[in-house]
Amino acid sequence: MILKFFELNKISKNTIFHLLYGKNEGLKSECINEIVKKNDGKVFNYDEIQIKDEVETFYESILSGSLFENNKIIIINRTTDKLYPVIQNLIERNITNIKIIINAGILETKSKLRSLFEKNKELICIPTYPDNKDTLSRLAVTLFKKENISISHQNINLIVEKCNEDRSNLKNEIEKIINFLKNKKIISPEAILKLINSKENFELSELINNCLAKNKNKTINILNENNYNSEDCIIILRAFLSKAKRILKL
Image (cartoon, rainbow, N blue to C red):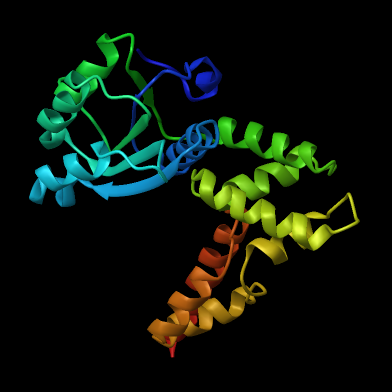
């Protein structure tokens, strides 16, 4: 059965198998943490390669009972269709007191694993598609509201632009801002820029001078440490062309 990430509350307590697939690692981590939180049990992490190399040992370790481990949560990372026979075997065993979370990457439409989970109502399948700027903006608004922090749409856009459409990066930047504010509730765009850039912006002229002087390492460092907007880029190009023409005339 297919569920969206915001439908996790619909998952029954009796559900054993959960499949999460897609590119959005940040969202997958959120979903996995939420599933783990809702279920008591000791967490065990495995990789597909580890299981394939020692299948019988894997079966024994997760299926063996223990007075100290009445409930187990098994997370299988980096899963592909190569593990399909193992998952199918576990499903057929009608296991109890175990939650199995399968963390897969991109699974094509023809994937056996994906098809198995999508068609069976007792199995949960959660696709995690890449975030876009709109979803990240909404997430940012929610996180700031939770902390009772007032922030403009302009500042939200500024933070989202810096995150390369990755919600993990977004959360890290927001956490820095929340820690910076402490008892304050308002933050300026200038303060945000200082927080989300690891260093102060270099002067545009410094970038141009180092580029023309062929100081490769310094030029790369300046580019990596700055957040140039479209206006800055136009200024850089014009200044670069102007200086280059002067040098050629010498």
